[in-house]
Image 1 (tube, rainbow, N blue to C red):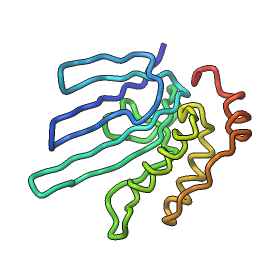
Image 2 (cartoon, rainbow, N blue to C red):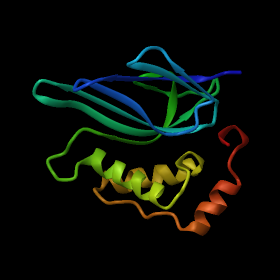
Image 3 (cartoon, rainbow, N blue to C red):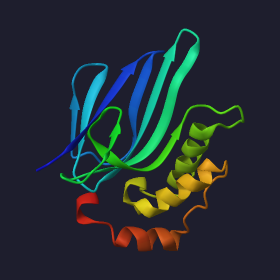
Length: 159
């Protein structure tokens, strides 16, 4: 079985690369600071990257990604091997408050607060949400009926 691997990493005040949501089929702890998560093709997951130095945050990003099956083409994404389809990407801090990453995390939190399993939502919804976020707006949330329709037809690999 082909798997996409994602490396998580934590060093206090320096690095925090972590799974935001998803259902890995394999979860390995490499040591106290590092782990490796594995996803089957078609599975959706959210991931957050954060880096800092003595002056503060240097890199911050959040993405909704889909594990790919070779020879499907994916994008090169940090910590993701061999890469993934990117359905939503927000990075950096804008001068406005909240910035792009804060808006994306607020959006994901809002979906979770409705008790939705973010890993089962149709990738097309995340692509549409990414456009709203790009224009500094919070995306429209799914209604419970829309969520049920979307997840009823979830792909077997993603369940």
